[in-house]
Length: 179
Image 1 (cartoon, helix red, strand yellow):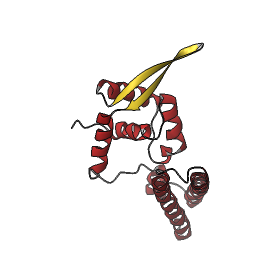
Image 2: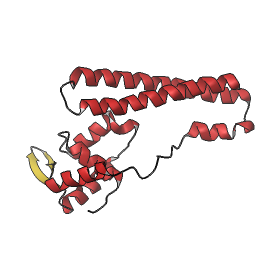
Image 3: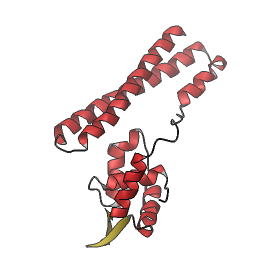
């Protein structure tokens, strides 16, 4: 079976949720996956073209008054099989985090203690805002998608985000106290 990049599989997965257009895919990405997987329009449309060429999706053009035709994509059985195959594979590696705060802290001896503390306090504040966003998203899923069979899995990934964010907040506080 041909291997694709993870973004391709993310798009195949999104197509299982009922999103059919590039715009709808991007909207779902921005509302849910963006906290751990980002995709731009510049990635979506070339990927959709590749998926169509490889017969993993079909495309239907729908005419719109005064606008260009709307392309709607549907997952084929081949596309479903590719997604299931990818899901069944073990992860290749633990993701490497690129974190500007850690990079700056690593070289912290070259700044004042006050600058380092301010950096950590700002980071902690942003993490607390992110945590609040996660709580809001969880409430929305529980309120508006309780009968959706995907909701449980959405909440699992959201719980990961909440837990790692809380751990980072705790780390900020401990590091500030240690400085």
